[in-house]
Amino acid sequence: MSERPHHSPTHTDFAGITCRIRKPQGNAPHPTLVMLHGFQGTEDVTWIFARTLGPEWLVVSPRAPIRAELGYTWYTFDAQGHSDPQTFESALLTLERFIEAVAAEYPIDPAHLILLGFSQGAAMAYAYAIHAARQRQTGAPIVFPPSGVISLGGFIPSPVKKPYPQMDRLPVLIIHGTEDETINVAIARKNRVALEESGAAVTYFEEKVGHRVGAGGMRLINSWLKDH
Image (cartoon, rainbow, N blue to C red; front, top):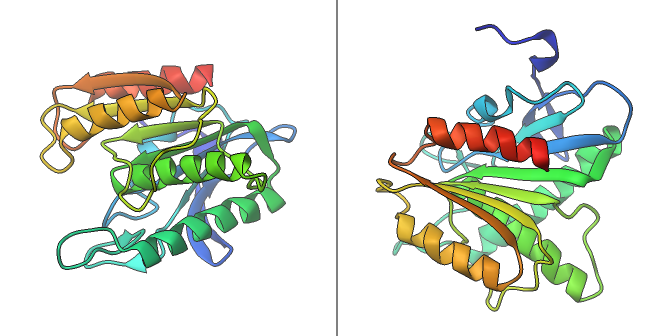
């Protein structure tokens, strides 16, 4: 099925980051979906998640800043497979600046700024949301905190320090495959508990699939976005 005209994304860059963007229609400010790809992905792989959104939505998918063997990565790993704190912190700052640069050209509705991430992209979405909550508590809030997070086959990355800050009922949708051999579903279950204990409003869904999103998960994403 071909996409409607308002679903025709183009490539550009903001703050030096290449991205794919679907420009919004209608009056500003615009509800916004920022889609973050996983390890060795690109800005082109997440667009299936945005196809049902109306033309008033600004949809943007940045390319991770570090080239990997295949595609790109948000941060690197050491020889033991642990997340590298330096490249992780750099990626978090890059994401913050990217969103600010997008908003400078397309006014973002702060009440409808959703971060959707798959795998490592979900790790970045979690990290950004927790960073925003922590900065708010310290009296130095970031310019564009998220109004919601969607984690698909994701995890809270190890460089994010505990205890997590108060999340103030931040809506979080977690979708995870029970057959996921890349990110075990037990991690998603632990993340759910940790986020709920920190005050997030978590919607949790498991499906009998691997490291991907099944049909039930896709339907839930669509309905959740309509409500948030």
